[in-house]
Length: 145
Image (tube, rainbow, N blue to C red):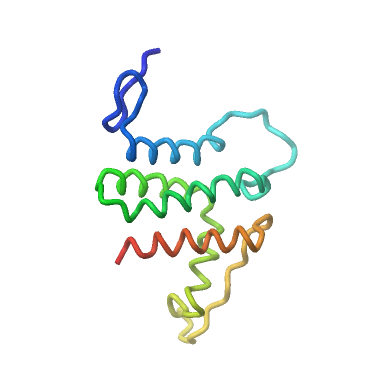
């Protein structure tokens, strides 16, 4: 099987700096969920592997910082990789977004009252990881402004 160029990469497999690195990080974030493993009796979630989650959060924080890069291609690739990350850890991001930023609520309840019930953080997410999820979410939220 020959190597195929990806987003400006060369056939030799050496992608251009910046955009290629974002694509690589995005692939790393989603690679563990696509591997086929024999079925087990117990169901594990992505939050059960604390070491992997910490590595994913470190990569996501670096990708979030590239949203300030001058190159549109780098920003695009970082956004795609962050999209994969949010999809992988969607429950943690729903919890983070539901809490709001700086104590402010992000929306109103359909019942008419101004308070919304908080969505619990998934089991396995430490307070340190929760802070990192919040930091990544803040960067993603700023991209929409």
